[in-house]
Each structure stands twice: as C-alpha cells, then as structure tokens.
Length: 310
Image 1 (cartoon, rainbow, N blue to C red):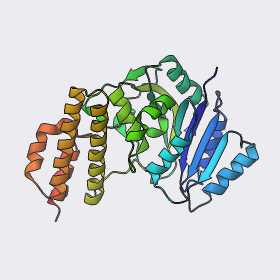
Image 2 (image 1 turned 45 degrees about the horizontal axis):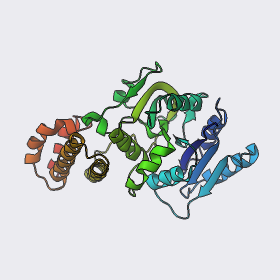
Image 3 (image 1 turned 90 degrees about the vertical axis):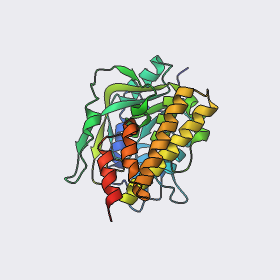
Image 4 (image 1 turned 60 degrees about the horizontal axis):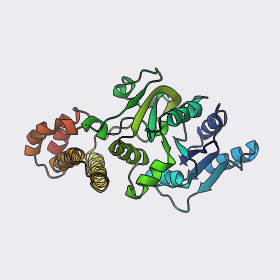
C-alpha cells in the first residue's frame, strides 16, 4: 500500500511568487496527495490567486485552501497548516521558493529507505530576485556537498541551534504525533521539530539540492538582529525553546548528558539576556566559559556593544 504524501504551506502577502511555487509542486515527478494551504489574512491578492490557481487546474481534490479567522503570526500559522495535514509524510513549503522537479521523489525515497530518520532537511540553491535581498549564509552553504549522502546530526552544542532551512524539511507523521504536545504558541515550527528530532536521535540532513530558495527583501529568517530589543526578543525565545526541549528530554528517557548540556545552554542564554537588558557587564567575561553556547562567536563582542549603548 502506498503511503500518503502531504505538503504544508503557510502564506501571508505572497502574491508575487506563490503561483510559481504551487506550479513547482504540481510538476513533481512523484505527485503529492494533499496540499494544505493556510493564509494568515493576507492584505494583498494572495488568497484570490491561490483560489483561482486551484480552480483553473481543477485541484479541489488535492489542494485545500483556507483563510484564518484572525492573524495568527508566522509560527502559529505554519503549525496550523502542519496539523491539518493527514499524510504519512509531510513536506514543509514556503510561499516563495521553487521546488526542483524530483524534490518529492528524492526526499520521500530517503525517508522510505531510512526508517531511523524521522525528520530530514536538504540543501538548496539560493537565488536573489531583488537588489536589496539579503546574502545567503556563507557558513550554511559551506556545509553543502550535493553528493546524495545522508548525515545523522548528533546531539551536541552546535546542533542545538537549528542548522537548516525549515522550507527544506520533510518528516514522518508518526514523529509529529509523538512531539506535538510540546509545541507552544510562538515557537517557530522548524526549530520545534529540529530540536525534538535531535533529542530523539532521528534528525538527518540529506546532501542534495532539492529546491531553489528565493532571496528577497522580505525574507523572514535572514535579517540580522543587531537592535537591542530585537536581540533580547530572540534570546528570550531561544531560552524558552531550550527549556521546552529540556522538558521533553526529562519526560522521555531522562538522558543526563542531554539534560546537562541543555541546562548549560539555558544558563548561558540567561547570562546573555542579563548582559544586554540589565547591563551586567561581568557576564561578558563569565560567558567566555560558555562560548560553545553561541551559534556564532561574533555575537560575543556584538552583545557587549549592545550592553554599553546609552
């Protein structure tokens, strides 16, 4: 019996690129059985374009579109779409990318051939479509090798930080059922599944370009947080996600090494918050013992400068 494949898409003011993305899903060498699209009350023509695309292509039996009663925000909207899917496999999809024609075929083959993998991400090819588009992350591109290898990601300090784009991810429904109750409002869907798959030892990365990622001025995840309040918001959300991950480990196996490492990250993140918010300048020196708890080492001097701002 063939397994059902779903796609989850969260849209918001995406009229410029959504049709090209939907067409790339439709053109896949392995068709998907279900596409769930949740629009977060767009103020442009996104909803009309999606509805017309479904009508024109006669996709009412596979593409299911709804508009939220109120604006939920990016994280909740994507989780809303994810939870509405019914497939055995679920692929995440942004509103502005382009899927390589065999993306579904390759991603599902990996999951079918590797039952130990519950969540996988993949490589992508970035392309800029506006002059003010952010640059792709060089550290991320440096890890790509496009050789069809599958890499297991071990539980360690570097991997506690999400290391791939959520739009490249695919997961098993059985995994979602196992972790769903640990999600909290505001927790980004990709970081949520990344951290909990990491805890379960079922997080893998597929070294193959399966999509073209569009870079433009409104990309949600690529803008740097150098303003104090934005950095504090990021750090407080980071700490909260560490704490929920710690709770998951406590309640599912009580692995002391994982617990210890997560407590270390929680402590370091609180020290970073206090450095900026309360100007506890001694924390700058104390944090040199926690350099493994930073995603990027350049954040150390940046956050000191934030603390010194008048």
